[in-house]
Image (cartoon, rainbow, N blue to C red; front, side, top):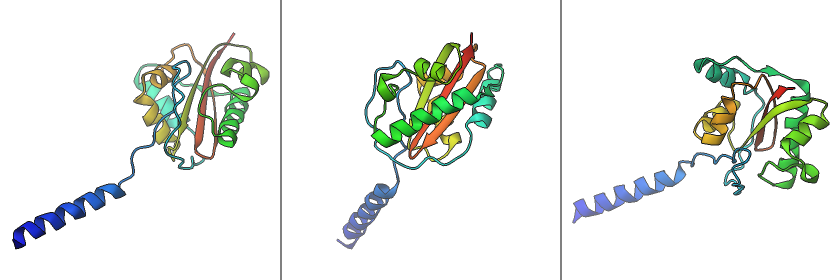
Length: 166
């Protein structure tokens, strides 16, 4: 009888401890995926660039590094602030804007743009790691014709915009 009590207590303790382990934060859909389900986590995104992890990942695939561009930085930061302020999770921005609209509004004539969003990843490196696990996000990070990037974050939101100028 005592053995059964110990097993029951140990099982209960394991279940209680398992409940304390946080689930990995969900990732937002890649542009064009159509999935705009709300994220479950609102862990604040900390400052820090995605560039080291992103460019190392691109280099491992034989791709050239991306260069930061001020217009893309502004477009990404504006979208991050908008999503954080409104609680939205999709790629549609203020006034119904697309990522291409936002990039062009910042003065960059781009022939190729892509956008990755993440919610709840505390660090830039964790966001990049999460994007690697998503087919659409991964495809965006490995676009061979992309040459520029911009990033922004606000609250739990991190936005990456990649582009190739015309």
